[in-house]
Image (cartoon, each protein chain N blue to C red):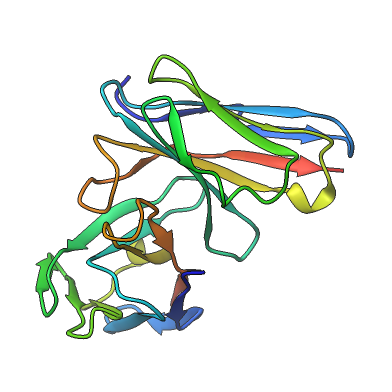
Length: 112
Length: 115
């Protein structure tokens, strides 16, 4: 079945540092999504990417849809305490089915 | 309502009992998805509905799991004869339509603990 490999599994960084995480797939997607989950809540959409090569920013967040359509990355610049949480990538291929498949998440910790 | 509402928020049950988890999607959202999040794991796709119809049930872990949606609105996920490995957070999400172009809005989840 479809698999999304997300890395790293967890990150420990200092406030102010930049963060980078990525997601790869064994199959092609034509939509890549990045979500964030705070403790005790459901995931919330951060960025959606619909075109290979697309680079999109949302404040301090930047995400790219890989040219091969099998990968995507998310960067967070100048991290702040409220960035703590779990970040999920998700992919969809409407030519295959209507499932939206999620990675296992990257847990971000910010050291005091 | 303004968001996706799930109930109960927490459920503790004994092994072998049946449980029902409910999801109230955002009004007007035709698509509804169920995911399972086990401790330290990602979101495992279970099933989705387009209206009242579930085109793909392949994500359901076993025949103890079933889901239905009525009136194009409320959905219920039922787990029969619960096992300890069923312990997880069950998340529901809705969107205007199916597919990645439609933003999924998630509920806060139902945390199930099977003793």
